Image (cartoon, rainbow, N blue to C red):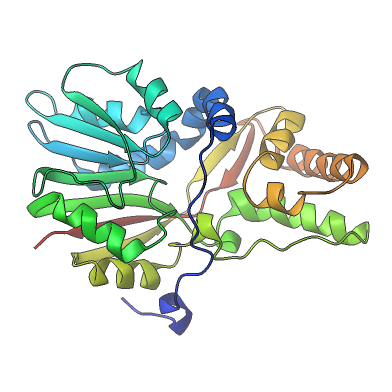
Length: 288
């Protein structure tokens, strides 16, 4: 794999995300809509993971558990799935929907949790591994939990400006703030949400953690926003880069940004709704 020197630069802004009760409640309130949006990402993840009946799977950063339940279906009969998340509220919600006794839920930090050594055939994650404070140590811990010959398959967001789902609203928001002559704090292109978003960098991290046969492919399939432009604007402003640049801004400024987002989304809407290119990586590796 060819590498740009920037692809192997040190991780920056790799601070853990605090999943307090309020943040978890906000996430869970929109879980159903978010799952519809991320279905194409799940398709890419599971196509690469190729889970088989009888396999034991560890799912990292499960949220309310949709990928864990999909994995459980894939490994039946005879398989098992362990879903781990740092948020008790997330795991509580996930556990209410579990399909059977062979699906285990763990509240814990996957970076340091003492999993049964060498037990899992596959470790998977949909956007749950970008938040590790020490990525090399975390992926080393996950490797120790995987049997020799087992595999890791995860999806991570590309860099900010390589993911239209984030870059387009961010550009609309910051352009509006410039027009209003409002000061704001830039969101780092390699900020925590995008900390593993460069193929060369994620390859370097996983190899340092002892994984082999690391591959990182770019996927740019489109994802849906709510079909109502106003609802899509509010969703975009509630999390991620746009939320950050709007922190501390007045209600009038926020209203201007919302109107600008609505206008942009209305312009993009077609018969299929409002769709933006996602921009993410599908990463795989093997324990040898």
